[in-house]
Image (cartoon, rainbow, N blue to C red; front, side):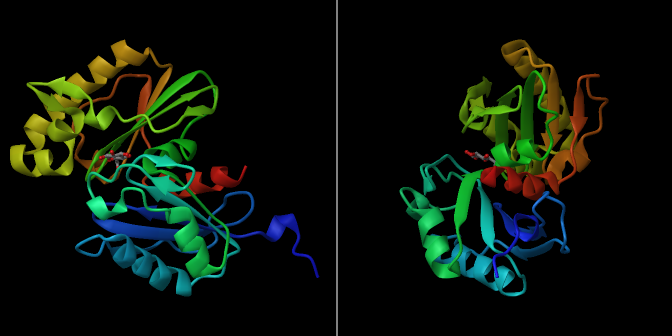
Length: 233
Ligand code: BGC
């Protein structure tokens, strides 16, 4: 019997610098499982990360897989992986995981996926993610400009956005400094992109202690998984 389109299940995977998360989505993109998480293995080699995904996937039922990866992705292949390991560069993540799982796999940048889980689809929308790294994604009327890497762009004092606002900086400099830097970053990016709306996601958003501009909001972390459904649209 053919499986009807309405019952196609997607395993959404988010590979992060500190955790790997999965959830199962129905064909409308609604979650139908609890989110589960395991620590990112150390060192986070492709083999170790894939093994962790296999363990998480074992407990779930699904037909296809959407993966968010913390680096530049082109046609399923990893181009950069600043917060993981150099052996990722050139790694065909989509094909390797597809062979292991025996299911179709699509991969995109983690901030791009987070954006799909957050945006309204109208106007110029910028998405930032604050976690181990500094993620960014840009959408124009719901169309993605893929792999926007603001994180590694110069920001201030000879440092990039990620060097000033990534988890290492937060841990080293403390929340007060980090918040004042984040305020400056938002002001800079507002002038650069003249976006209609800004969405800020990622685990560190809970540390934000100032009032965001009226055209900005914090999005729940689960957006980094929910957006995965868009890889199959
Ligand atoms: C990477 C981005 C990624 C971000 C958040 C950065 O270091 O270069 O591709 O989206 O971290 O994980």
